[in-house]
Length: 445
Image 1 (cartoon, rainbow, N blue to C red):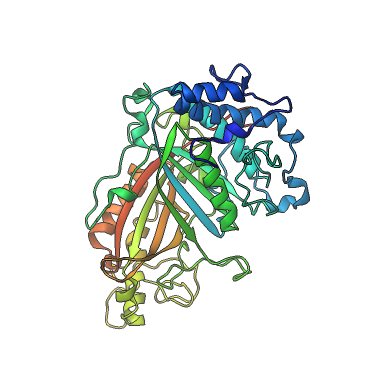
Image 2: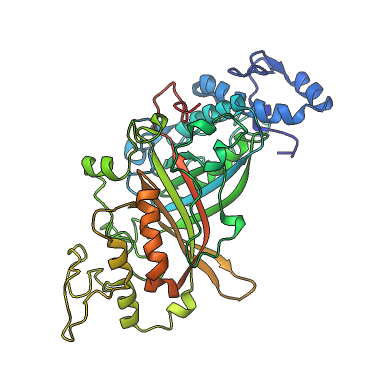
């Protein structure tokens, strides 16, 4: 595809005209000659942005008639996580093997264009999670394909796509400042933070998880393509954990320090717990977030070279858990409860007072839902060390009362801080789910 061409340029109907809907510019049929005229008149940017959205929406109506597409029918429904529902998928649904995360900044000041972008993203996401290609011009030899194509023939891979907006979304641009939940704001700077702007913030955050990295990347790539002229990528991060093939028992994943990560997570099958911990309620702050959740994303670099030189005893004292079993120190099984009163033979706490598990436990009543992935981004050219660590994601009902309260304690005293540094930070208000015919974000827009 040439740089001046957009996805919607390819959504050509059988009569040779490019048509779209739900957009003032695109309510009428636009011929390819019109496209060239607009481009020549300097309206290319407008066309690329609005046309991309309208084109994808139009594709919905003609998708079934498209040629050269991959249909979900050839795949088992076991590989499909439903996109529509009360809540967005990708929050309490089981974590897949891979992550592609993208933060976007908006380049428009028009709420109408943002609304159309989310309508287009919703349509495309619903299609991609079934294993289909988007658009209806994937076989014409005379046009660039409407889908980038790298997922053709691949299974849906249990892909989920989860959308949210950051605090900056509620600035003066769209007239939505009054709809920002009072406690939803950028995180405070915690002790030891070494945040880099290239890993922070964003107007919109999209989390794509799938059991195949290429399937996940395909989704982010096409969502970015659709947003052309409206939003631009700010930063991205890929992540991984052990695959289902490598661990058929689906045990708790291990992080790059070799320890199990997520043992203390609440049970996602416990609806009462999820309502208390994860889902926003009507009357919490803003009703448009009802059945949504607040996401915290932190890029945490691990000083793996230093960690690898520490003794196993020091490593276990740092986490407060045995490396092999994941059990709390002094216990045998991974899910044994933490005994905060236990003492060793010398009278010292079995779980050191500054151990990670003890501090994160807090009073036992403050919980978050972790959905973290390991990352490896090559080598730090300044130090020659691995740029690797944890892309931490958590979901909670209230960031201030849950994540911030917990992180302030960890930042102040956690022994693990000797081996990690937080370099990226973002928060996103993840909308409730939607139904067929609706779109993600409609409760706010």
